[in-house]
Amino acid sequence: MTQNQEQIVALVDGSIYAASVCDHAAWVAERSGAPVQLIHVLGRREAIGAQDHSGAISLGARSALLQQLADLDAQRAKLIGQRGRAILEDAAAILQKAGVEEVSVRLRHGDLVEAVSELQSGVAMVMIGKRGEAADFAKGHLGSNLERIVRATQRPIFVASRAFKPISRVLLAYDGGASAQKAVDYVAASPIFNGLEVCIATVGVFDQQHEAALARAKAKLAANGLAAQTVILAGQPDSALGTYIDEAGFDLVVMGAYGHSRIRSLMIGSTTTEMIRSCKVPLLLVR
Image 1 (spheres, rainbow, N blue to C red):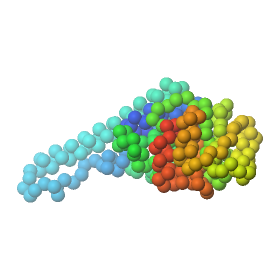
Image 2 (cartoon, rainbow, N blue to C red; image 1 turned 90 degrees about the horizontal axis):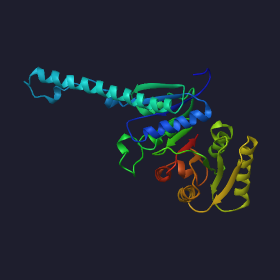
Image 3 (cartoon, rainbow, N blue to C red; image 1 turned 180 degrees about the vertical axis):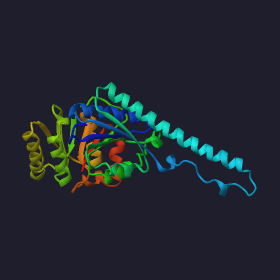
């Protein structure tokens, strides 16, 4: 990694979303020039090796049985580690095939969220799939770590959709708050968005206040060479934005992780979950 260059951290597991995380990481790396670090975290329960089974064996049971149980635990821990390394190898192969030159891998033990919170320094972006291994076949269930990770890190979080498709149209959700302004600043400054079509959208009534807020956001992007359209949508934030995303054919949604108006609910509580669950495109959440 080039000195002082921040890296993309891509969290991969055995879920069907892992390939999408890798494909999106390759896309970001290609547009930004950033190196990618792939991380697979073995949970504490997975990482545990031999356990004490003596309490589960009745008095007088042969010690050989205890030894067999201990051997099975050790074998299971070894296989889980091998599986984790295989997941990382497969992920690295996807990135290398896509032309990413700087790829590193890391197998960690412990809690996923704790692992992410320790990676603040030198990280440009954290990428994760919308759902994890346990939720592949549960469409109504998001990865249990997702909201915890958003709250635990100050870095932008890229939530990958189930499958990658080329990104050319970006919706920037804007409510005029500090977090939304940070999202505007991020889009304006990041090379990721160069040459992409950007639309800045807010939810509310069509009035001078909303028009002025959108004009300021548009001017910020224009000052950095990005042309953008603006739109004011009526209705509730999750449904209004969701419908517009589908109808207009956006490929990526960018928004602040916390807001100060009705869009605030998108990033906190049940409406956040609904937005991420229902949105078919990836989301980039900026803190």
